[in-house]
Length: 85
Image: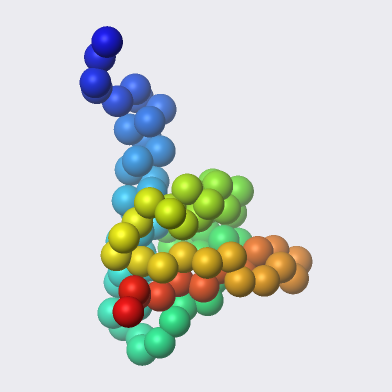
């Protein structure tokens, strides 16, 4: 049984890392929580809104250095991203 990641898993991991780094940078630049919609940050992270939405669900429980919460839905899901207390 191989412990190496498959190419698709590695690609997904790279996308997730890119998104996490984007949020960390944005939280450093501003004070307080960050409220985002995938469609508005898609160009900034070079991902589609659909990819961002799927990654946000995965990152919610797997990234300790960020708190990610589904906040509201108005024409697209809004996510609240903050640093843990």
